[in-house]
Length: 418
Length: 118
View 1 (cartoon, helix red, strand yellow):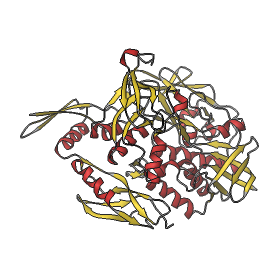
View 2: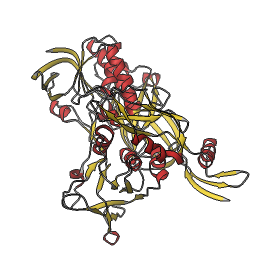
View 3: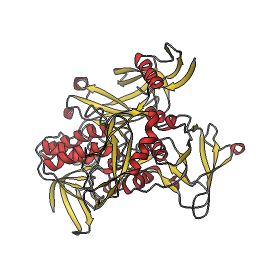
View 4: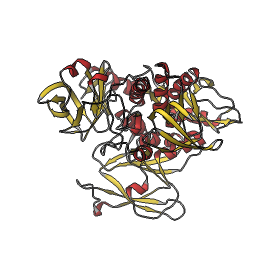
């Protein structure tokens, strides 16, 4: 089978990219989704707060997804569900498997990777102890409760103060479970402030910083966990060990972009984000393979995923029409002095639309700082921030005309004291 | 006079607010902008929340449908509302926007996802 544009993943990133590419004149599009419906993880995020930037109103996850699903269907974009991509190769051929058609290949003119991310599990943390039931990632528990209609436990400890963990603390409390505490190994939360207040403070759930779980107890079902305070090197302090009785442990300890397919194709990966190195056009290191959304870097807000994915869709459309300039001479970007990473990684000024939206994360909590961008010793952007935190992604817009005088070299993004 | 400590949620700053509640006035300290004051005043006089949950579905391709309140309800009524939602069920199909419970604590409970018939 041959296709102009194949999009791997039918979540918010894949849907927004598909719609944009279609509107820019690409008719032959196929979205491949492994789940039984479009919409991705938004379908289980039944809380509200989505869409403030894109729609100017607060929607729940399923409502946000539905707006894009409806649009995609109205535009007649083709999709297949319950279908898994097993392999992607450099020449943009993908190997696909589903129940109806079996195993087959699709050769595409362009591919957009929109596979999203997955949760870190107990295995990634190496928590010692037995292996009883009752240990879930927060997202797995969210799916059980919100989509399958099963609550997963009565007495709950949550490890990690990421947004999904906070949201689940409230969700399980509403359904009658007792959430005893949320433990965070860092001295700050990676979750949004709004969620700490409305999910924990509202229900008097304690959030303990510099704490972790050091042991899991119980044979069939979880019976309790041993918690401990950690020192400045994040090592547990023996004198602080404490047994906490619980039947459920939720893990909200980080998300990892899902790039097995990208790696097999030979796409260059950023070691900090665990996502592809991308250009101003969201193109990866392989010509014609694009990427957007959480597969590139984990976002806090779906609105930003949508914006980034629309760009990927537009640029993939340009590529298919032969209008995207090749990156012969590019500007590299780099985070220094408190900035952990910057996306996109490379800029070809010729392809820049009105501006470039740079997304970045800081490595710690800082107050009263200036975020700046410099090229060859010259400051090309600066903005004052009263506070930055690793939990809140920073976004910086640099106008096209700034790139008139810059054609190569490196733009460094950093923080300094205001 | 009653004193309460709150965290402002309007921006990432998350100002720690100290609110002093007198009989005739409310004093807010610790805010760096006016939104902090407004937030604190609402929180101590009449805190409200939008509630999202799920409701049981009969004869659907899924056993539950996600729901939300059409507006904010008083925070003190959240668990009362949860009981009402959990005592109810709805027959499939359900469409986004369908009103599933009418006029409860001043709002409706509406569906936020679609569940087709099995």
